[in-house]
Length: 114
Image 1 (cartoon, rainbow, N blue to C red):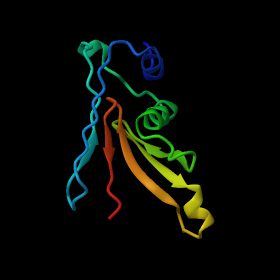
Image 2: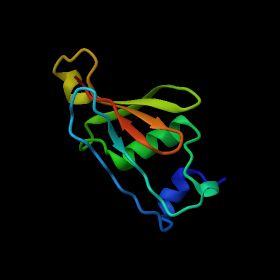
Image 3: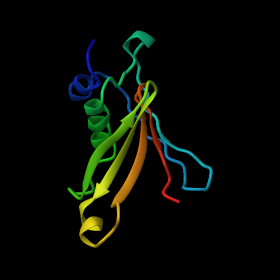
C-alpha cells in the first residue's frame, strides 16, 4: 500500500479542494480532500506521522510558530493540535493555536476554539 506521504509528494493527478465554513457555534469546519482515485486507491492515514504530515501540508506551521502534536488516536481518527511557541513565551497555559481531527480517510475536521 502506498502511503499518503508518497502520494502527496508524487502529486499523482489528485485534485485537492479545501472547503471551510465560517466559525459559528455548532458549525463544523471541514477540509475535504477529493481525488480521482477509485475506492481501492483512497487515501488512508495509517499512523500519527502521516496525520501530522497531512496537517503540516494542508494547514502549515504559521511561519515556524506552531508545533503540531498528535494527542490521541482511535480506529476512526487522530486528535491533532498546534501549539504556539509565541503564545507559550507570553505566558499562555497551553498555547493551543489549532485543534483538529484527522480522519483515517484523509478528511480534516477543524475544532473551533470557542
